[in-house]
Length: 310
Image (cartoon, rainbow, N blue to C red; front, top):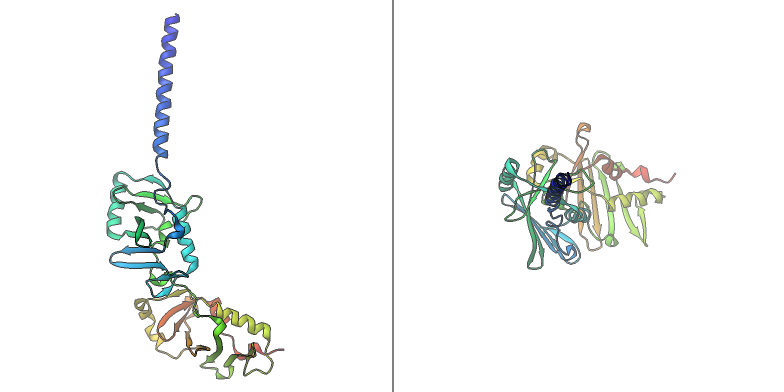
């Protein structure tokens, strides 16, 4: 009796031990995904990030005071912050296997984005990024490894979106991007209503409107602040701008010209688009085409009478 009971206890112990070992094994397997494999060491020292896909390249480079896009434009500082925050918070949830692994590997080869982080002449990290066709899931892959499904814990976001940005999308969206301490004058011209034109100038340290005897300084200050902080919704590439060729060949509804004390001129021509499309198109310095949100444009299109003190 005692021997039988001991045998039963021994068998039960062996079964429990086996179950425990299995749980530990599979639990460890689940936890073997290193949450830090895509993390970039010492992000603060990264001074260059390179995105490459299908022969196209976008380079973000820190000049010592600001980030530049392809050595041509200032980068949007908010997007830079979002990008590095995304890299810091993104975590691999699981390694892909089977048919899904093959499918994502094929997609990485055909349209994956190579992302390289540099500290001076030394490459700190490199991995590949791709999203699914529905743009709901993101996958990262290191050289010599299988791809991982990646998320930002606590958020339902398409992580790959920040990696997919094009040159113009990385640009600082400020339209008049210069030192406003050097401001000299602003001329607003309404082509169809020239009687509403006005000129803002700085005299004895105070802003005034030449065509208005007594201007409402509160309205004028708010207007100038809107101009100083004017941002494009999006800059268009040359190819995208072709869709608006016929409109851009017409006379603009509104023209704004700003001059600084060094006699540099900054010009913006604004064209109307139908109410249905809910946007306005503009041309900056006679070459760069951009889109403006209606609310932003409404603050820009103030007529002379608006500033008269009543």
